[in-house]
Image 1: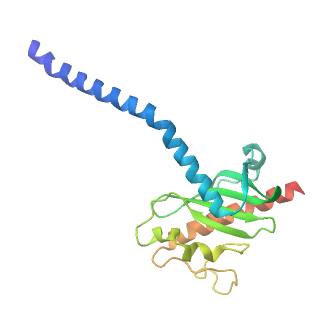
Image 2 (image 1 turned 45 degrees about the vertical axis):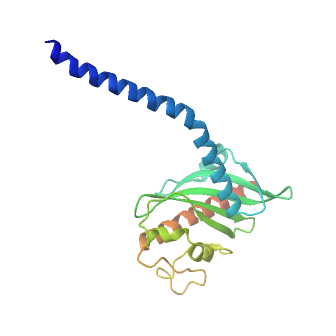
Image 3 (image 1 turned 90 degrees about the vertical axis):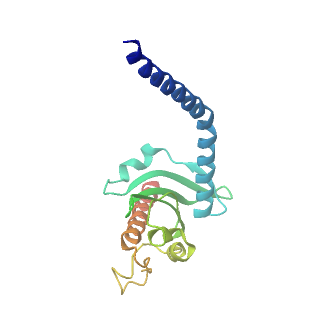
Length: 191
């Protein structure tokens, strides 16, 4: 009978010790990871709207303007340049081929896109993952909408999609349009 208890007791002890080690490791790494994540998001906001300072907009002020249609607005920041209101930076999660594609979009007071930054994603390497490349992202700068030439070939605002990654290209355009629509409503509400 003693031999039957010996093995489960050893396994329990090993599992307990490993769990304890993992718990302690989590406690000590949680804050540095959070700080690193916050710094990376700040860097992305700076890239989306260069030369600005950012203040987070209270969710209660913008949530009423958002409809849940597959794209999820994660956060909204007001951009100030030289102490003056310059526009917004909106973070959106949009459904791509490999899951959510995080987009950080800068939009000025005229409703023009200042820049698009692709954050975390699980898109296919060499195809959808090319959305992070400046050649794709920079096509949206200065535009008031995001449309693919494949979908609207006669539209002057239309951009080239990613070759072999239509789902990702459409996810990016949907996310950008979600942010543009939200900013338009926020600007209307400001008067």
